[in-house]
Length: 110
Image 1 (cartoon, helix red, strand yellow):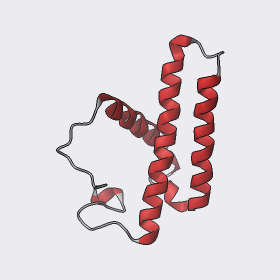
Image 2 (tube, helix red, strand yellow):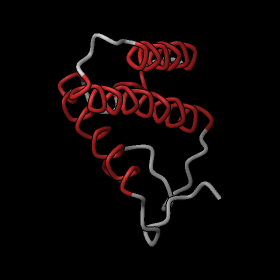
Image 3 (cartoon, one colour):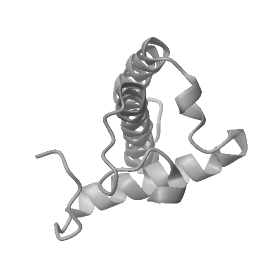
Image 4 (cartoon, one colour):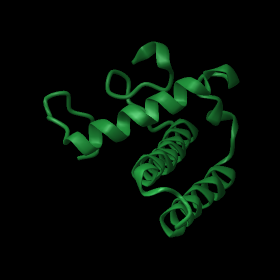
């Protein structure tokens, strides 16, 4: 459990979210790939809470045109997912939990 399996067909919602996540990560590559690894867990957890709050505010914001609200909600959800991924990745790096050949601590080994 918890391991990535290539044979699993992801739901369209998961594929959409993953695509938005990767787009956001690539837009921020100029900051340094995997730059989140320079952050500490407490900062990342605070950032995760901030992103959840932004999603909540978005869903409560009646000034966003209905034609745009779905896209904005998906973007905010991708923000949350990215930060959650950063928390998990940073934790695994910090405790040495990556197993060779299964999950790699750097982009080159993936």
